[in-house]
Image 1 (cartoon, one colour):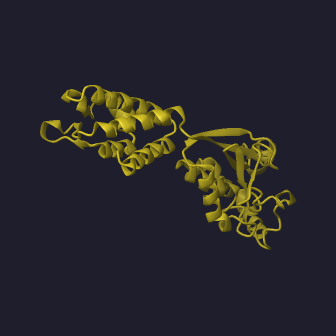
Image 2 (tube, one colour):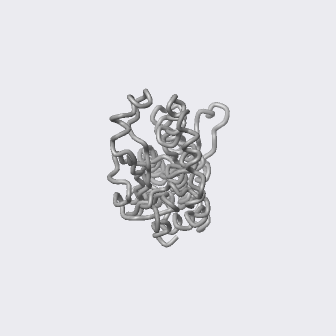
Image 3 (cartoon, one colour):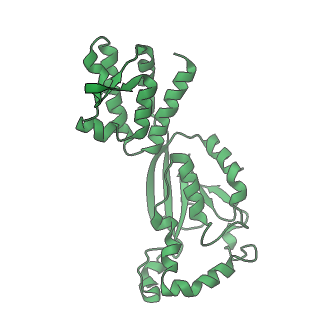
Length: 276
């Protein structure tokens, strides 16, 4: 088949894996069965029909929007009249289906690179122990995050930094959040970081609105199309809504003046140490 069609199919499948890390495997296994049935029985019309009302098809396959796009690329069309409940394969290019099947098998055996977010407590347990007495609200930690992929940890501290996983200046992560796989390459990530480098510098750091978690969120969205949980990304909003938070907010805002000189010395000299 033409390389352009091959590339479109592969790109669509990679998008499915990136956007649906917990669902893609089952969906692609179902797609494998459907394509095999057509390839092995090309003249049998019953194998060319996908019923939307089928419980498994509906909940495990068609619940993924990108799958519907893939079906259209392969030659499926929505039925009409008494077939409105169906997608019907109206194509005759079995080579296209075979190629798609080969790509699926390749991606199922090697879906990409694992993406983990490390979640650190900057207070080293003090927030959990003392928060209720101080602000009248239980806070399990004050969060810093870094994203780990390609065997490295990327984080924002005095600039975009990269280092060995769990060897950054923030201690040991209290949680590891699994975001599945990315089909981006390390070169893709480096190019992306270069494109946003001037947005995450010592001078652009803001303890409330543009901090380490905002960088992690941006990198995470680039890699897998997902965002950090609000419990991390918007933690400052929750804390500032407390009476104590309202009292300290002016202090926090003043701390961001003067070129962010309040940032810990441990950040110095660490920005861009990955060659970005």
